[in-house]
Length: 602
Image (cartoon, one colour):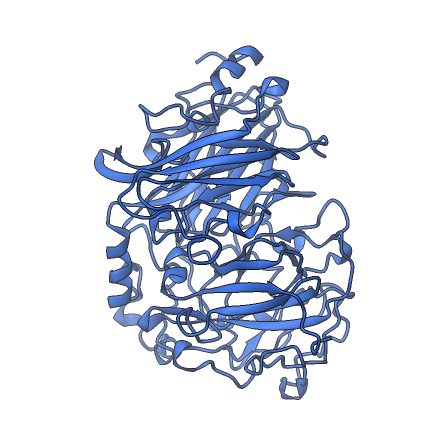
């Protein structure tokens, strides 16, 4: 394929928004070589958009299947908006069941957020619902169904919101790179298999020869290979809806600055992303501009987005490689000067194993030399006090401010202003009951850690302490209240919850409108959890002071105690949940009621 000049790029991508590519089941942005960067001033931002959700027969990797598509494509069409406009999106449900669309990361009125049973009733079969909201932000986002397990069946797509002001970085080409996991099984069967036997899809479990060394794990009813609940045993991993062998391709000319907008639209899969031979400069996280960070690799949790810029200087091809965190599979694409070229795949990495230290259970080595007691462990902001007034806390969430139980070789870390001292603290006495099968002895910040399987790669891996917003936060108030929330689970029974209680047992958290809230996540489980708050931003307390990054989805590692700050400014009821789809479905979900502060609270 010859290089596309500005006008041919325009003709090729002007329809990238909606209603195109239906015969091939690929929207325009997902086709080979379809850059978005050359549209320029000729783009029209529609005030009214029409979407249809329907069941569509597809063929993937030679197999026939049925998917839930938006305007006939998987992923769904790109919705491209402009900051400052107001948009109306008519969603017509052609299914035989209710559906919905949630606009992930978009700040909008609660009744437009698209969560059935929380903010609206859902969209009934053969009916149309009109979402209407002002567009008050810019960046890379996505949309997906919030009804049952429809997201796993292909009901998702990308959103790009162009800014009114010039962006603080330049680029020549622009591509959406949407990662997802696809199963030919009925998602309800997948969930039933997990409930029947939680390691059903873990074909990498340890053998009898490992039983002695795995004694501690057996006592906790866990396995060190339990990195992901659902694996390549059933999943095919896709890049822009294309399986690895079909090799989705993005075109460039040598010397181009190429923007790649990575969106993890998976139901259950974390990806480790690298482009061997190219540095990636991360410029956005969850749609928010950050101070540029040059890395070789980054881990993208479910529902996160990262925008990166790469600068290939020669005509060689480069592999865009997204390997699953558990190493059971990968999605791949290619950067090339013309279609049909491809680079070799990088060597596959060995499966990672959890360690007892990962779980805060390293009984004999919890001192300063332990991996969990790394000298960079503390990333608490100096302007965020520990809030010893506990009156606003739930009674079953101990804050562990009495540090007398810490081992003598774990420093107290009175200076919480930056990485440098250990912040590991005892977990506390509350195990949260039968809904929580294993509680770490110690918990603390792991923001500086690349994550399980990325510790010794020899590459520069993005970590949360790298993220710094471009501009200071708009609200510099001290948090006035602190709420601690434990991420809990019983893997043996496939129960996932908050504070040991699933949604059917405890439904709601209360935030007070106008308050500055410190929300502290404590991960009692052996798995990562991507936690998503609807309607408001979470600012990661990562040591960046007034430059804390804003995110809509926060990855919380095992045995991690991770504080975020929330400017509570969105009255109404909002969803709050783990974005691992099957975890949310079985109970790791709450609603947040943002209400006026009662007089007695002060």
